[in-house]
Image 1 (tube, helix red, strand yellow):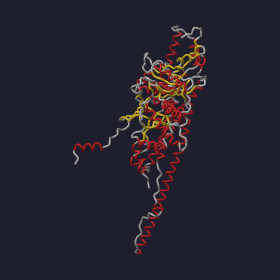
Image 2 (cartoon, one colour):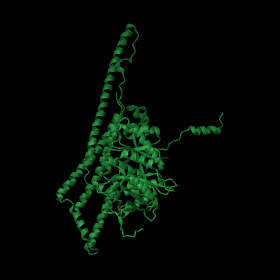
Image 3 (spheres, chains in turn orange, green):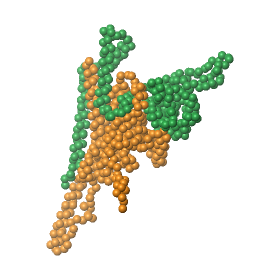
Image 4 (cartoon, helix red, strand yellow):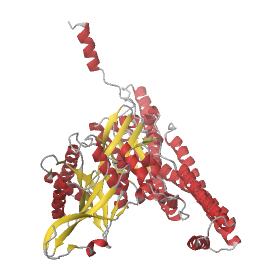
Length: 337
Length: 285
C-alpha cells in the first residue's frame, strides 16, 4: 500500500505539465539580419533554414539560425542534408550557441506559402519538438520598405483534425473550424544584446533620411501590384476548380439519393407483392447494391489553403494601395507648392 | 636596426593603397554575439571572415563565424573546426570565400601575427579586422588591417599591420530600420502605416531645414554656399515638367487604379467569407 506521500509524488509525476500557450516569438536582431541576407541573396528562388533558440514559458526565443543548402532532387542528398544539419549544430554547440531547434524559416514569393508541404513540415517538426514556429520572410515586399516578417504556427484544433485526416463538412462544422483557423500568426518581438545596441547606436549614419525612406517613398508600385494580381487570378482559378469538384460531388450525391429512393420504392412494391403472396419480405437495404455505396466527400483542405492564400493576397493589395494613396497625395501636395 | 650603409627602409605601398574593405552589419552582429557567448576563460574571440573581392579591389566582408582558440601560453587555433565550418558555409553559398579573420579587443597584439600567418596561407592577402568590444576609448572602434612586408634592401625584416580604410555604411541595417536593431527590446514590428508616417515626418523635417536655410540666406543671416545652391536647384529641376492639368490627370488616374484594386480585393474577401459559409453549411437533401 503506497504511503500518501509516495502516491502524491506519483500523481505529480503522472500529470502532464500544462504547456502555457505560445504568445510571443522573441527574435534577435542577428537572426533577422541572417534571414534577410539569405533570402535576398537567393531571391527569387525559395530558400529555407533552421531556427535555433530556447523555449521559455510563453515566449519562444530565437537566438540563432543557419541556412540550408539548396536541395537537389537526388536521393543521396537526403543523407547529405541530415549530415550538414548535424555538422552545423555540432559546430555551433562548440561556440556556445543554443543547440535547440525551435523551428524553421522560409522565404516566400508575395505570400504564396500556404501549401500542403508547409503543413506536413509542421507536423514533422511537431512530433519531435513541443513548440515550433515557422518564420516567413518576403523579400519582394520588403523592397517596399516594410519588414515583411511573420511568425506562424498551426492551430491546435487544426493539428488534431489533420492527424485524423478527415476534412468533411460535418467534422469541420463540429469543431467550428474555418479557413482562418488553420494558421495562427504570433506577434514578434525583437531583442538585441546590450553590446550590439551600443555598436549600432554608434554606427548609425548621421543622415536624416535613411535607405528605407527611399524605398518607402518610391512612386512606382505597379510591378508589385501587377504580380499580386496575377497570383490572385491564378488562385481564383484554382478555387473555382475546387468548387466545381464540390458541385460535382453534390450532384452525384443527389443523383445517388434519387436512385436509392427509387430502389427502395421498388423494394417496397416487391415486398407488398410478396406479403400478398405470403412470402418473407425482402430487406429494405442491400449493402451489396452499388446504389448504396457511400460516395467519398472531397477533402476541403485544399480549398481552405487556397482561400487562405487569396485572403493573403487581398490583404497585401490593400496594404500597398493604402501606401500608394499617401504617396500620391504627397506628390500632389508637393507639386502644388 | 639600421645598417651602417644607408639603405632605405622600404614599405611596399602601391598595390595596397587602393585596398579598402567594406563590412556588412551581419558581421558585426555575429562578432558581438560570439563575444557575448564566449567561454569564460578566453579574453577574446577569434574567427574567420567570409566574403568576396570586388572587381575594383575592395574586399567585401559578408559573413563570419567564430573559431575556438587558445591564447594563453601557446597560441593555437582549432583548424579542423575552421575547415568544417568553411565547408558547411560553402555548401550554402559557394561564392563566399575566406577573405581574412577577426579578433575582438583594441589594437593588434603579438599573437595576432601567428594567426595572420595562418590565414595568409588560407587566402591571399587576408584582412585582419579588430572590433573593440571593450569600448576602451569610450567608443567601439572597428579597424581593418593588412599585412605589409617591411624589407630592408633585399632582406625581409618583418611584417607590419597597416590600417586600410573601412567602409561601415550599413545599407541593410538601414533597410531593416535602426530602431529595430538599436534598442534592446522592440515590442512590436512596425506596420506599413507607421513606417510610412515615420518616413513622411523625416521628409517634412528635411524640407523644413532646407526652407529655413534658404530663408536665412535670402535675408543675409547666413552665407550662401554655391554648391548647396546648385544642389537645391538640381533637386527642384528634377521634378518633371508637366502642365498642371496633365499632372492632375496622372495623379487622378493612379488614384482611380488604386481605388479599383482596393475595391476588387475587398469584394474578393467578402466573397470568400460568403463562400465559406455556404460550403460548410448543412447539406440540404
